[in-house]
Image 1 (cartoon, rainbow, N blue to C red):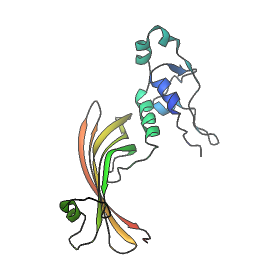
Image 2 (image 1 turned 90 degrees about the vertical axis):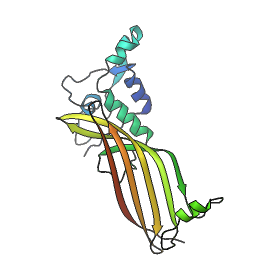
Image 3 (image 1 turned 135 degrees about the vertical axis):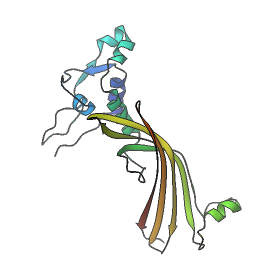
Image 4 (image 1 turned 180 degrees about the horizontal axis):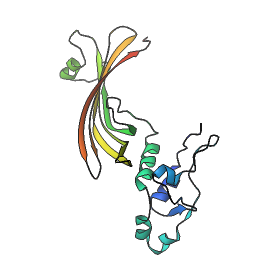
Length: 202
């Protein structure tokens, strides 16, 4: 089955700004993917349609900017490229396409110069060692609202604690609090997910 091949960062920036336009834009496209990518086939990947320099941009960059269709899809694709199409929001049910961690910090028992309060926080009630991770994350999710494709931009805190139950099993609760927003709605969503990890420790 053919897959979707993401456009390059350069192509996305040229299209987002209206500096480039499609040579033969489809007339009846109802989504960004249908408009910007080639038709789906059983043998070839869906790639960016051929584009060219937009002559209107040389006359009026503002008019060229306003004429860009499905810019939200282009911005989402650009964000996905920046995030390497990874999603770290594992604790929420939102259909997140990609996310990026900002200002992340992890505390572990083997770190030097820890305060006594942090050392105590890195122990469970039973005295087992654990690690704590905090970060500000941003992400983009895709939704269908009234049969219309809508992309939501979200930002929130993500926290993770990990402690070892046995030499090869760890439990990792991950909590996420996100604020997802569009032009029409905003919602707050706290979520917690617990993951059991199997690994070999030296």
